[in-house]
Length: 230
Image (cartoon, rainbow, N blue to C red; front, side, top):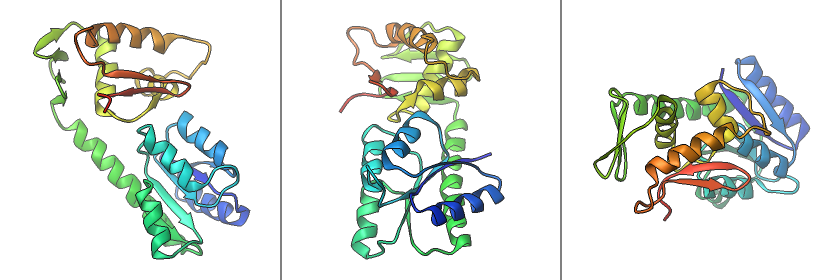
């Protein structure tokens, strides 16, 4: 069941979007405040976000810029009464994947959301069709479940390999502890546990040796991001 975050402060518009999505079988979460919407987007995993441009406390553009800055690439459909070409260009340049102007046709809104999710799913399927993954000097053999960095073998336990594969597949995207637990271990997030920290610390020791450029980075208060820093 696709999960969509609706960030919209206009009650009638929010109700319409939620009703449309629920009718089509989507799981829907909603926020009416920009700051709360950003917090929800950072702490949960969504297949798509519908985002109003004008929100209390934090604008839609500011939310988009914050998400993209830390590498969160969840598909975002901007919804706004601002429909001039410059408005749409600004929204898309800020990181929006699509833009629809109020008032909108229900079927068009649904079609745009479905298209965003379909493209995201297709991209993930294409990732899963390869037998090898490579990021810079790190190579993963998905059939043999082996890893190398700079051509040197890395001895990984099964859980460590799964964690590393997950990082490589979503390199550049911030991954919260909640996302990692639910995706790899099917566990509910418990803020009091250091389960994820322990596994990541072990993985770091094996792939981020002192002479190598570090690949696993902590995003304080949010989670982790994998990749070389620019």
